[in-house]
Image (cartoon, helix red, strand yellow):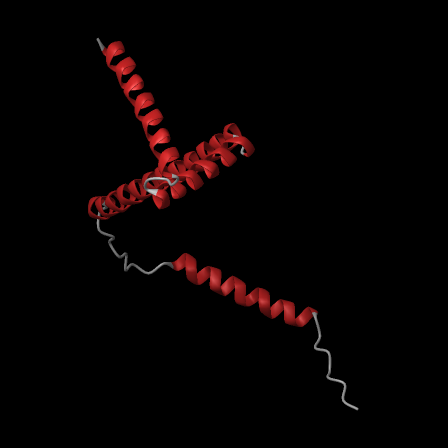
Length: 136
């Protein structure tokens, strides 16, 4: 049944075309001249593009460009998700850490280190005499 519809539609369109061309031939002018001229220009442009453009390369370039855009969007979205999860985990870790207890006991090892460092600096000054400034 669908084949019959396509065949009848084709026959009707072909008959209408012949009737229209004979009518225009007798009258000497085209019906809907402006619209048909515009349609002819569009069809000519489409024919030119189809004849001179490598559609395979064009399609390949468009697919690559679209894949790049989609890939960038996916990576950007995943990065935002990772950053959001990171922020949530950082907040959670802050709450889970035990509070820091300040140790106020004096440390003698620090004082011994400072004393040793001071002695070293004093011995260093004794072994290296100061160079006087030269003024002219």
